[in-house]
Image 1 (cartoon, rainbow, N blue to C red):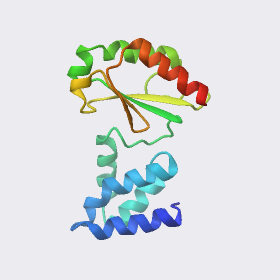
Image 2: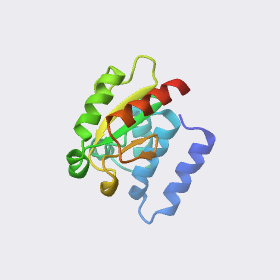
Image 3: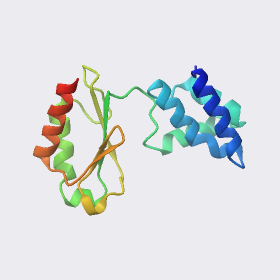
Image 4: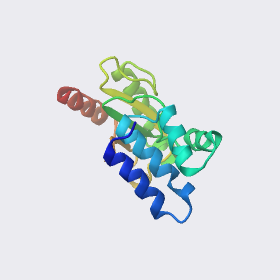
Length: 157
């Protein structure tokens, strides 16, 4: 299920924390990075390594928005909707993303290029509204900037 490098990284993660359970989120993120999302098999495997119950892993998965249970698009967008972003137009940005992509938040476009989710806070209040695409921040946004960004990503394929 994990590459040899991933398996080595899992073992390393267990070794660097004073309590094994502290490695849970880093391990889930590693599974997501390797597989594109966190599969049920990966959750069970990680639970076994950490001596956790399935429900303990499940509760962590359900709490953190960054952990995905299904594949995302090649370009996965996190649209900040916290107060600062909302006051500066994130609702309009969210609506334009849905319109431009032709899918609802949480869905993947037919071509597999895009997915987007609402994200509570990206910690970029002074540069609101903000979004993150595959870990890269985009700040001081407005609808035209977001639509141009989507067009550019679409050209890249």
